[in-house]
Amino acid sequence: MTTSFSDSYNIDFSAYDSLGALDPILGIDTRLFIDPLLVKNTKIPEFESASNKIEKYFESILRLLKASKKENDMFWNKAFQTFKSSEINGLSIGYGKDNEGGGGIGKIKKLEILRNLKQILEAGTDDPTIFELIGGFQDGIGPDLISDLISNILIEDFISYTQRICSELKIKLSKLSFSKDYGKSDLPANILNGKPIILVPKEFLRDLPIADSFMDINWICKHNEQLRAYLNSVIEGSFKKITVKEQKGHIRKAILDDPEFLKEVLEAYKFAPLEYYDFSDDPTGETIWYQATKNVAKQHPLELKLTDNPSLDDVYVLVEMICEHFKVLIEDNQLCKLLYDKDGKRKHESAAQLLFFGIANSYCIANKIDLSPESDAGRGPVDFKFSSGSDNKVLVEVKLTSNSKLAQGYSSQLPIYLKAEKSLKGIYLVIHNMEISDQRWENFIKLTNESGLKNLKMIDVNAIPKASASKSDK
Image (cartoon, rainbow, N blue to C red):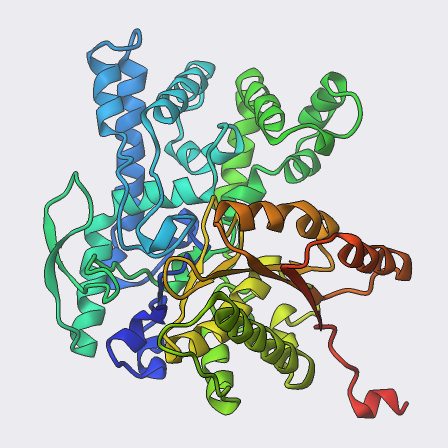
């Protein structure tokens, strides 16, 4: 079962949304992240002192590192201890599984970060804002871990914010633990598992924080001629062709070689124009699917019947009907529009996966079918598992025609997952979100016909928006 927080407490969505909090989908990761720059510029009362808290926190760690003469001395160990990296359960954002939080920043990664920061300090830069840009020069640090770091620093503020929102909506709170490093707090419970929910203001969230673009090599090269010359001298060919780890290594070296360059970047970052995520357009397809598919399911009900003791074939027939119904909704009922942003740009494949999940979930609940979105560093390895009992499993993989691994997914990826899950049947749902060459499509159809995979069916869905009648007549 998957439901939104507001639905789980029978709160009208418009009333909830008017308060400005993200309405988390319980059981599904919402891949948006807390942007420090947006937090520091908020007027939300619970976060009035957020900017000062963040700065003071980072300053305290840098001060300890500066005083440290060697690793494991008193100051170094205190810096390591002060560097909060606990996993916060209940935030419902980022790459965590089942809304229970991500993995936090582990001890090894924390040690690497402190070593790099110590080097930067010794090179002459002690601006605490450097913490917000560590993803640009530290291996293995992305927006989810920066988000974790900020949530740790401001956890008391997030709890107070959650309590106020729940008070206004008259939502009952319970004493719940959200981290092993903190005590229990009065928080709303997740009806699916009884664990805490911590609400996040929508205005804090972005698909990628501003800091990520500032530490992107293309931005840096446009603004720093010296770094551009340096990179040209050490890299043969395109910077984009080397790995992200290598890119970060070069940026890190440039920072250490030229502290003035880093100061320039930090100043530009601090005064960057604020860019808020457009939740009405939802360009990455992370939130809009839930309400849209709930409405569509009501407007276009699907009559399904499953016996009390269904066979694998019975479950497969039901899943196939859901996939075919999804095809109709996409092709004939304008649902395809949710796969593109307001400018007509194609959204990520995850938007299509969530759209299918929203439709399928509505029908599965009514028919006591368990629908599980799989998870392995995101929404893989296989997209969805439908099951009734331990033996009746049908897998569904969603692929866009814009995905270069369209054929590979059919010929090798899904069959492997079928075997791993001990499932005998699967559906490969191909969604056309771009025109592809006749030759490529013919080769793919030939592959499906000659694969010998009799237990695997391909369903083709045309999600390319149709031109309106007025336009086609011109």
